[in-house]
Image 1: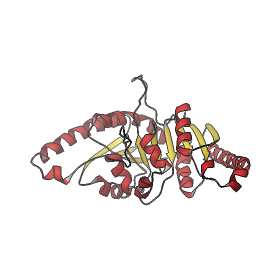
Image 2 (image 1 turned 120 degrees about the vertical axis):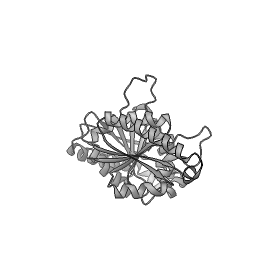
Image 3 (image 1 turned 180 degrees about the horizontal axis):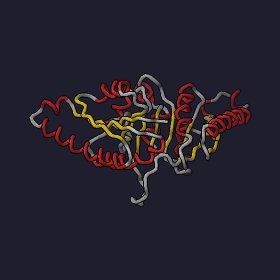
Length: 281
């Protein structure tokens, strides 16, 4: 199970909304949370640097109290400098299992790259990163449950296999539904592959069934499988909406995600556009 997380927190009210969603991830067995905030060297050097740090400390205390109420053991820390240069080293030294932060929403015009804390955290991370989106349902009293329905899109690559190992850790969570998905993209197939598409669908469905049985062996109670055809981002987004997915887990490039982020991969697209939380491995 996941025992320790680092929560890279901002000073905004939306960070508090995200922290309220963290109660549901306690089902992973998480005991400890290192709560981080970062302010720049420019802020520190300015005449109001002391005021900024005081505001950050007060904000950390409010967030800490909420996490303690949810059952976490919480340590707080302010990082001075660039969090993108610090977070990976801290995660390694603290032996954290996962980094958590608030998801960055795209702008109305759809920006080409991430901006803000989420992008900085992803920039160099070699740990799984969970981008949390707070409950956006009309009923504000509905409790945010990130673990309610996990979707796992896979292309059966090595990256996806690493992500599946994380999914197996999450599988025993009580009340969690899991949907395994593979999307066949005919637009990227040559004529020879198109002619055997039905055969490929059956083979891929069999692979998903093997994964389903493996998850059930790890304690999962509710696992569905689905093979669909179309553009991966479009099909995954449609399934996510139809099935009310609360968390997407995907593999991404290791040793820092920057190259993939600039290339506009499926995982990058979903991290920017998905209405659910996203866990990148």
